[in-house]
Structure formats: structure tokens, C-alpha cells
Amino acid sequence: MSAATPTGEQAAFEAMLNKVAQPCSTTDEDPSGPGDAGPTGPAGEQSLAPGESPPDEPIEPGAPSEPASQLNDRDQCASVQHEQRIIGALQSVADPTPAKVRNILNGLGYIDQRIHGLKQDGRTTRFHLDLRQQGGRLCEAAVAAGKQTDVIPCVAPAAGPFTVQKSEGA
Image 1 (cartoon, rainbow, N blue to C red):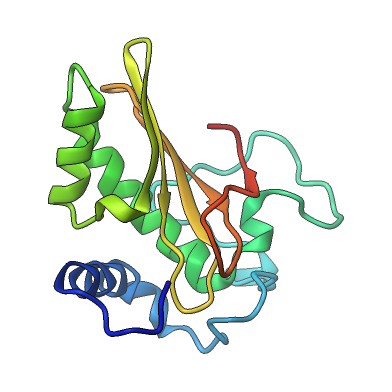
Image 2: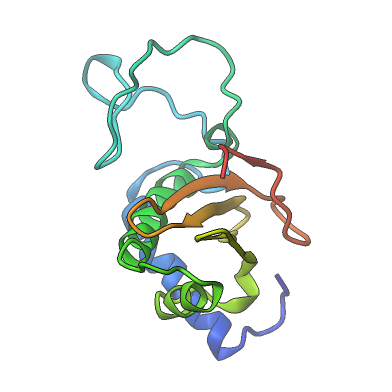
């Protein structure tokens, strides 16, 4: 991202990112700090995000290795917000071609410069979204597949060209 004055489209994109992450900005955490927040629920239990199910298996102690462990608290929270809005918009698309997916993403405020690897894969369309902002590393890996649409967080470098460093599997 450049230090120059953003274009109107870029400014609208930044405003959309801020609006989506607005529920995440109410924490006292440093937005550039690591995502190693301790327990947040009652009796020292981890809280679940809205719509999340508790894990089926016990959680093993140790250093987390999934993308969420490399995202700061704001990015982890914003990821859930982005996932919900993208899945909600793409689930109703019966034939998710790259052109249809791009139009829907554009309609949600995601700009072409931040949509990467948009390609048809059988009856689905795969893509990544670069959602890095304020030194964050958030990206989303997605598969548009009608009712089976899925979006998961991934990690990108904090600065420089967009590449996916770690993903949970899409």
C-alpha cells in the first residue's frame, strides 16, 4: 500500500474495512500487537465468536500454529465479520463463475486490486482477499460453491506484495 493519497475507490475500500471491523475496535488491545489474547470468557474459558461451535476435541496446550495465532486481535475479529458477510452474499449464487463472484465482491466493497487468484475450479470459484490494514496481516481464502461456500482466514506479509503465508486449508 502506498503512502500517497488514496484514490476514491481505495478510500471507499478503507472505509468499508473500518466499518466491517468497527465491532472489533472496542477492545483495549494494541491493534498492532500479537493475537495472543488470554482467556476472555467467564471462569477463564475462551469465548466463541457468534455462530461458532465449540471444538469437538479437547484443545491441547502449546504454541498455536494456525493463521489465527499470527493475526492480531483486531484482525481475528475482523476476519469473522468479513467471513459472515462474504458467505452470506455468495451462498445464494448457484453458478459461482469468476465474473459473478467478482461482481458480488465489488458490490460488497472489495476492490479488484485486493481480489487475488480468482479462478474457476470445477463448479466452484476460488480466490483470496487481501484485507491488510493498519499493519495487520489478514487475508481470506475462499471457495464460492453455492450453499457450500466457505471463507477462512489466512496470513499475508504485513507489508509488500500480497502473498499467502499461511492458511487453514482453502
